[in-house]
Length: 244
Image 1 (cartoon, rainbow, N blue to C red):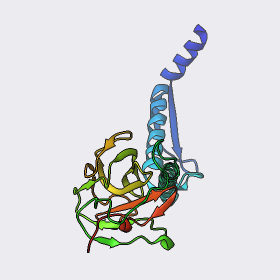
Image 2: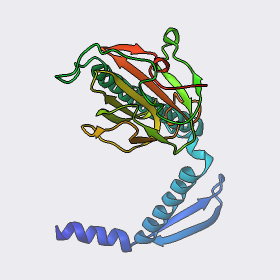
Image 3: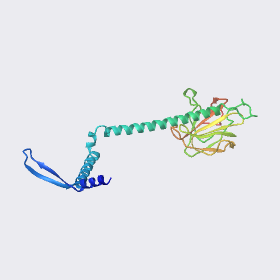
Image 4: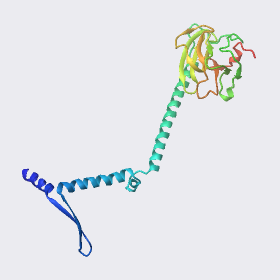
């Protein structure tokens, strides 16, 4: 071990000459450095070469090095994948919401309440002051009516009942559903804030949400109201006390 260290020491302290000679053998000049000097020179030279290839366009000449276009396409692909994952997540949330609403609308009414009540025109109050901007259109899968309103307007329960659904939806904003004693279910969509939770009892005219027109399916500030009975959609205009 000592002999090996001594040899290394001698290699580092011994001087070496680099001669520059012309083709005909004429001596030009020489460079004399100790072993450690030549080692430092090689390290500095190697560092300079690395810097040149690492921070100049020469790096693209290295086989396998990604070009700027490749990196741009790679970043674009990553962004598209992220957006796709976001859309898939949103669609899954929408499917889950529809599944829950479907279960709500097909659920049995509470015990002691008749399943098929006698519904009369105008027996429920209007949930918000405004005009009906779009009627119920089953052919276009528009299962309720749209009522104009301003963001932050209070939304009222059309009758007494129990809150059975209160969540946020990517498509329809904050949604709340109330089951009424006669088995009717009223649903209020595109709200900006929920003021009631599942299980709470409400009376006719109680403020349950604040309007806002939230959700990707909303074209502007309005309240969407649906009424269902036994899984069948009913036209809210035939139940609400509404006049043009």
